[in-house]
Length: 591
Image: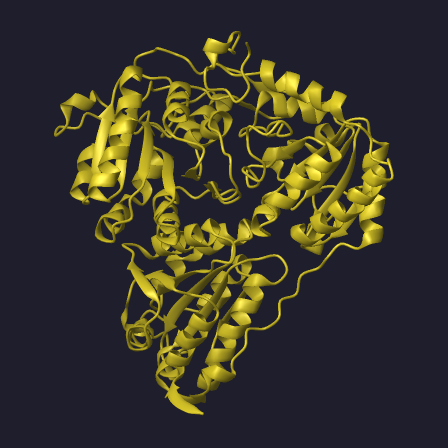
């Protein structure tokens, strides 16, 4: 047995569980952990500028590769409360991250000590598990349980709160005798899958809805194999985007009130049986349950039992990890195919493909100031199939999902349910840290960009290069559009005359100057013809300087992006594509 400080044992456990990177900010109550990181070694550390930023970096890190666990570290008090938003967004999207906070010594926990707060009570609603460790001997086993909780069942975040004296106490611990706990994941049975396939076989117009659970389970190849085996078209959710390539003939669009395709909504409304795997039936995907479910049957496969029937009761529910379920679906489908029991779905698929080629939104506008649709057209021209997009919320994200293309799993990294402004910069940095070879392009509106802009300095300091496209209309654009229903345009304008940047003509913050002041490179574009050259120049600057490169595009102040209150009543505010040149980078051309 070896004698060591409890916090050194914690670092050894993290290393044994596969952790090699952490994001955080030191502080008095967590300094013992930092001393252990230095002494033990093996875990790289990225110094954030804000603890919320560290939590989002951890999210980006986890979302990049299957098996990754992002770790964020902060001191006592406000560090933990600052990370609540990161824990919430990770919890909402089933993303495992480990949050570690320092705490006042045990004897002072009830004395309202400086920066002592009951952080575990605060974060319990937004974590899978949270604990304040009160006995030094329990420290390594609290971390063992944390990794078990993060990885078992529905993934999610955990928080471990460590009083200062608990970290410092000496314990006996032998890392060579340590083993990670075996994981618990439910699996579909053959009987369940046969019943599901029987329902699909009765259908004339079946669909597969691929959710984020497929990405989490690293099951995208299995999804495509099952779709190709059965011939059933696939509709990914926003969180499942990339599970089947956009140019695959069986990818028939996304469905929803905002981040959707016209052809995706139309196809869902024509379907008669829907198999959802690893999805939540989120309201921005479904709209009202009555419209979404009318005239069709549903099969729902999800790893979390309490998700089955949460939004509406399916005709068949199966509790299973997506990878395990798809493995059984493929096994049974192959047997049915060999026996001639699988229907030919070619006519239905051709019908879906016809909608995909004809129901397109226009992107080719020559307006000055720039219309946002043109930005995504130019991004499609410049960025290849291996591009990984990172975004969170706003009209920029909604339009990006309508017009950009994703070809690989984990190449659309998006905070789905929570959608906190400011998430994009730190999440993108986490992605680059997790995979330095990846071509990362972040997408923000001006307000999302301003929220955690200080984290750009992290990218400069630690050489984490990526391209950040900022579409600037000097508005809280999504909220302004929502205010149309109240007949107002109130408290959402970000425009002002910047005395130091008159060339902005009232667009307010000089993002180029701020980005450069934080150690990054930045370009600004005013006309459509300048977008593509700027994006290509940004790629060159990325290679040369190895820091984040910002491309700001000045948009027209007001553009209403397609959305509605029902999937059968989406408002199209702009002209629709009539010929191929109206949407030259659409995934399926009109002519």
